Image (cartoon, rainbow, N blue to C red; front, side, top):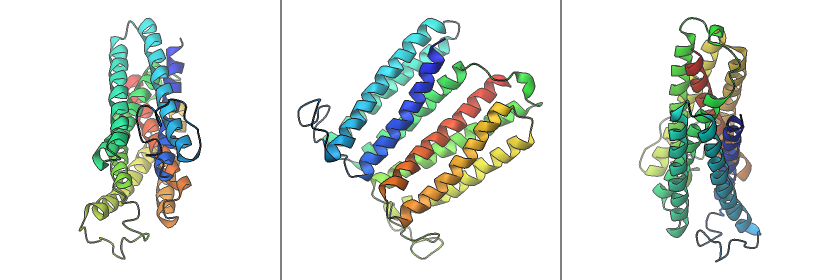
Length: 293
């Protein structure tokens, strides 16, 4: 069957789109194309400077829509016995259209904070949906007997909670990005020289809350991984759990590096990419363990 591969490609494509989108913001290229959906009145502008990143982002987004349409068409033919998959695909297509509209609004209204934050948050929602479809349609690597009694259920719940916390952290990170709060606390590990800074404005409050939630996310994911390794979990999931542990630690390191390097392009862009990858891994674990339990 081709649709599982198409859904996996969609997940990877979405991760790449999120990475390029982060580069667009980090390089201050968000308004390099002042109009939408064209760029300086054409669909084939000169790909130089900020236009390269901004228009590349748009092209990748358009390709993602086409890729997911293909995956939906394949799923319609091959999953008639699982109608919920087609319904999820339709929801994904609607989500892509809404997300694209918000992308256009960010340009037309010149990067309003909440519109830009919503645009990025919806991208994470679509990534989670695409991951559910990829995991649910993948060929199972293990049978239900590979789980110990009650292990699959608990793993599914813990991974889903972890994914929810990572999404909240990512949405808050989007707010930090688009309110220009990335350097509201320029020191590490303190914030403005204090353990708890004066929360006198949105920038400081958002940045400090993002740091606190990062610690909670780190502890939660590491607990999940530690518990799962002690439990009877299939080897295929152990690899994904190891990936989750690596990603959450790398996320913290990249967050620190982003501040110490004054929001350099590389750590900031990778920070977004690794957050998206961590969300996808946790959603995959939750989906597979729910099916197999």
